[in-house]
Length: 273
Ligand SMILES: C[S@@+](CC[C@H](N)C(=O)[O-])C[C@H]1O[C@@H](n2cnc3c(N)ncnc32)[C@H](O)[C@@H]1O
Image (cartoon, rainbow, N blue to C red):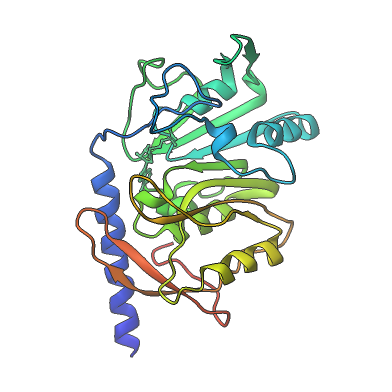
């Protein structure tokens, strides 16, 4: 039995690397969402930016939440996991022109420290290189604890990223671990398809235990996979205990996916954390 559990963890490490290396190739999907919809968005794939894509937290959208941190602490550290071209971070820093009314929204400039993680470096129509003043890193979002060892962030976002990795709950676990006390994480599109069909229990658990916002899981248009959006605050001294266990691997071509089952008797420990 012990050998079987270890074999599974080894397989998980391998499929995580497979998914990551697949993402190191340039892709045709949207990689440059900004704060709000803009002229460069291409319907029908996206008509929204981060402000619309991410669920509110404590009644605040992601920009209002960042503003709250800046007001309280004088500055905010923001990490965008799977940041694509980095346009959201660039707009947080330098501001942007609103598509709807043409008004210029000022950036937080030196009041925000921006960190972007991506599997692949992209350009966008507006940014012909890595945006200035943003700490951009190439690395695997499934290993956040290792990549950002000794660092913490006030806000961590992940928009349309979790369904590209093999082990999405390892990504989410790492996001929570890297939050400062009182910090918030915001996720758009995390696969919610437990092998035992206990998705509703997982959502209820996160709502009850962590006051998380978890919307009803929906089917993603492009991947036909049931996903949910989550936002959550890290409370001082409260670790994330996820009642999940690895349950095997769904060996799909190109993007393998780790399977999970709901188990209230365990605390999820990501393989290769
Ligand atoms: C669909 S794009 C979304 C980009 C951006 N968040 C947006 O909404 O415009 C997916 C992004 O996730 C990144 N990504 C996918 N798998 C990753 C992984 N394992 N580690 C780090 N980044 C990853 C890709 O390189 C890309 O930047």
